Image (spheres, rainbow, N blue to C red):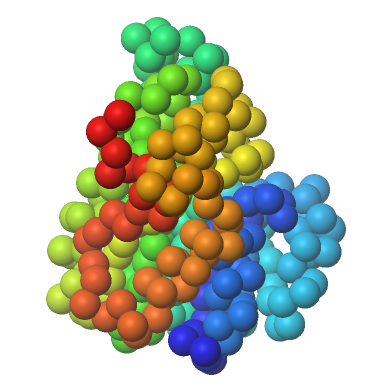
Length: 257
């Protein structure tokens, strides 16, 4: 098991269809101890039921899009309960519905700021605060989730593509800032998976159909397959990998048409 006795914090768990849950299943099977964050105290019962299969797991309410002090308080509680962590997954993104439905040119100022704040800045804040409170073990690994819409125009992805581009650029700068301390920072660009967030993208099913037709492997990916890539990045097997965007998309991103 490549993550035996390592502590992994998964931030942004929503339900059993989420990529974060796929990461949790993979990391747990590889021996990791798990902590989770979720949004909304009203969701606690649902989340605690969801993570009950992971022995010793704990969940913490945290709205990562709120003030940095809220994030700091949550991370301090994780440290109190688990000690230092070896990996953090950032699975946090949101854009206003109207900014996904309408043409990108009509994105509002507030909508642009909101998408980038929640989807990109939150990763920067989490990384900084984790460093400041000495949450990260030696050789810790930070991973965020991105998507192909950061580099190519995809229908109805709009401002989220811009936010994911900012997130990927942040990965490169964070890898430079934290590398001197042995901390690695990477992103995984997953193929289209039918998550709750994906439901907000109009005609999302057609994107999955195109991937099945065009990708070299002629199929879509699963959340657990993406989770396996994240587990690799959390492990010492990826000790020389940082600042990268790793695609887990059945090869679709290499195709020209």
